[in-house]
Structure formats: C-alpha cells, structure tokens
Image 1 (cartoon, rainbow, N blue to C red):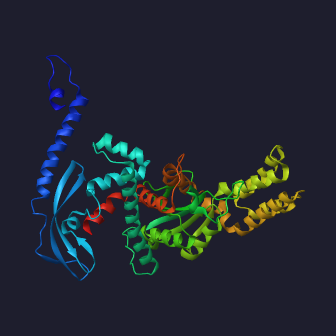
Image 2: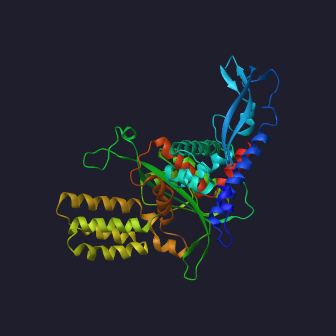
Image 3: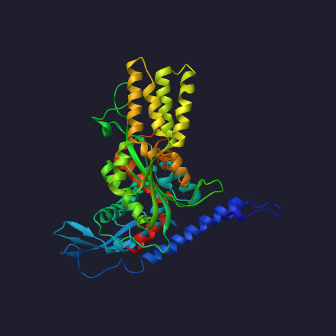
Length: 436
C-alpha cells in the first residue's frame, strides 16, 4: 500500500489523506519492532532460580513464557520469566508486574484509550473510534470489560478516600485561599437494568414491576461572584461529580468526602441544593449540619401546579389562575401565605384531598428551605439545575440510551469512570497508577 500511495504520475495530485494513513501505518510497524526489542532486552526479567511470591512463599523458575501484547503501536511479543509457587498454586511473572500487564493482553496505553472511549460512548462505538482514530482493532466486549475494570479501579481508590474521611483518618488539604460559597447538590435518576436487578422491587409501570434502579448523583461547585443584578455566578470549571447506585447512607459518605476534598473546611458558606427528596435532607443533616438548605424553586412551583390540576382538572384554565398567586408568594419565600391558600382549598374527590394534604405537608416540612427572597438577597443559587443537568450529562447520555440494559455492577463501573472523566481527574488517576 505504501509503495502505491507514494508512486504517482507526474502532475498527479497528492492524496494527502492516503499519505497520512500510510505514514501512520509505517510508523506503527516500525514502532512495534522497536518496542518489541526494548521489551525483550532484559531477558524476560529473570531473577534467579527462586523468588519470593509476595505472600511469604518461595516460587521456583519455570522457564520463559511468551505473551502477545496489544500496544498503541501494534501487537508485540513479550518474553517473560515465569515462576510457580507451590503453596499458593499460582504463577508469578515479575515482568508483568513491572509493565503493569498482569492478567491482561493490553498495554497501559491501550487500556487508557479503551477506558476513555468506553466511558464516553457505547462500547461498539468506542471500538470503532479506536480503529478509526488510532488504528487499533479490538472487540466491543474487550472495550466493555476494560472500561468497567478501570471504573472499578477508580472506585477502589475513591472508597479508600471515603472511608478514611468518614473515620477522620485523613487530614484535609489546607487551601491557601478559602472558598467563598460551596454548593453541594444532589439528585437521583433511574437507570434501566436487567430483570434480575429489580426482583422484589416495586415499580411505576402498570404491572407494578420495577425496570430501573436509582443512581444518585452529587456535584460540588463553588461561587465567588455575583453579576450586576446580584445573581450568583458559578465559578468556571469548578464542578465535580460523584455518584453510584447505592443506599443513601453510603452515598452520604461519598458526597461528604468529595466536599472535604474540595475545601469544605475552608468554605465561608455551604449550601445544600435538592428537589425535596427526604434522603437528600437526611444526608444534609448528618454530614453538613451548618449548611444552608435550599429546595429547588422549580420543583416547589411544580408542586403547586400539581395541586391546581388535581383540584380544578387539567382541562380547565382555573388551575393556572389558582396557582399564580401562591406561586408569587413562593418566589418571595412567603411560605405562610402559600400554606394559607392551600388550606382554603375545598377539593371534592379523594385524590384531590390527598394531593392538597400532601402539598401542605411538603411546604410545611420545607418552609425554611424555601425562603427564596432571603436567599436571593444573599446572592445564592435557588435552583438545582447544575445537578439536574449532571444527571443528563453524566448518567443519561451514557447509561440511558435506547436499548441499554445494565447490571448494577456494570452501570456503577461506567458511572464511576464518567465521574472521573467529567470531573477533570482522568490524568490524576493515571499518574497515581504510575506512581503506585
């Protein structure tokens, strides 16, 4: 192909794309030959007839074993000294440990590429991207397994940080500059899962079966300035994410550790934003007891609309006429007036009465979280749009596409991977791997 690309008649135009592709293939073939020589220059990393198996036993040399390794420049053959531990009944290959290829036929560079595309697009699309952009041909299943393994690897490191923070074994990094206002926003969204992951769980479908599992997402961002009208401005590139399909108790530790990592102890103000779900305020009370708690204004307005529709019907314009005055009260943070208007309603049906009472309980329980006039005067965000957008970007865009059905393990692995990518910590993770 190379000869054909470079051989052309006089005056014939250059096919630059073909030349580029040919040169890349040439470079990869040459690179593979050089890399193979470099990797095999140490004789397979022979360390004598006996070595320690790393578990206190003695492993004996069993000859050279060859492995075909997929690298960013192509496939190479690597000779490795093999040792066998009779006590552990397992093999020990020092060279695999040194090259970070234990249990895999992919080089660290290729694994990094597989994790990157697997975290950003469907696995088959990721396979095609690697072939088109890097000239590396792999199966979609290989991309899936590697991406999920990297996600679980990220979680192992994160879990250690979470548990250390929860047990106060970690001394938070003291920032030179304090954080003006830190926001911790939380939300949940359903992820489609295979049937065995929802056994015994109630769902919203007509048959009562659940088809999704709730993935909790948290984001931490900061605010330093307000605009000329006093509206808050989110600090650029300040948003980081954590998430998981897990119980609220575990997620609470996760989001708290992230806030500590981001400078919680140096924050002048801390604000918790949520849609009113009880689990959010349970986490806020436990881990952020001094924080300002704010219910998202849009969700509160939706509650009023739901009441109006249940009492006056969706076909009537009366529900809109009723909802407008309490909506204005709500925007001012006058929750007492909202409650009075709700208590004056006289719904006829059982469903209408139930809807009104539920709304009364909701506004009563969250009244101090809805002082929107006061929050605006303080220059604070009163909406949870950042985390709601995060649910679409971090979770929905990758885990909720048409035809996708996940195991909890697989969904969590990709979610952890995406949180790392979208929080700008991808390079940090690989540097930590190299250092460790």
